[in-house]
Length: 188
Image 1: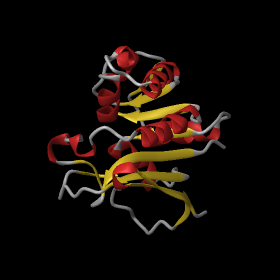
Image 2 (image 1 turned 135 degrees about the horizontal axis):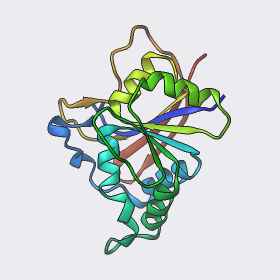
Image 3 (image 1 turned 90 degrees about the vertical axis):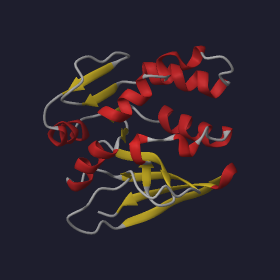
Image 4 (image 1 turned 120 degrees about the vertical axis):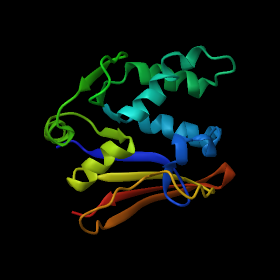
């Protein structure tokens, strides 16, 4: 069975986006944190996206390696992003590119099917998609890069759950700017 990891940048008060889908609160990550996310992506065999995160990522990373001033890590991330197999879950998007497959049907059923198959770890991004996977008990690991900022509302990292979910701390690391990365495994 494949491992499913949900990882996002998050505010101290638990939001991945402020009101109006504003993600500017994070600013550019430090070089060290960006490298950590690059290594995380390189260790992933398949990335699953919800519509909003897909639109954000696909608006920049297809040409991220061609941007003026792109760092070596950003160039590598862009190339890895284009080559990485991806699945986008959306009922409103009509077409995807860059080694991506579109799923318009039952996300939980498709994620369950993918988890049951062979292959390396899968990463999951996007709050709505992650919420469905959380409620279905499909997520094996949670990764939070917590920024020292409060936004007071917006899109929460975690959805309302039917019952408590106990986790085990796997890693804690502090990056420049006071960003704290934590990884938790789901207790089974």
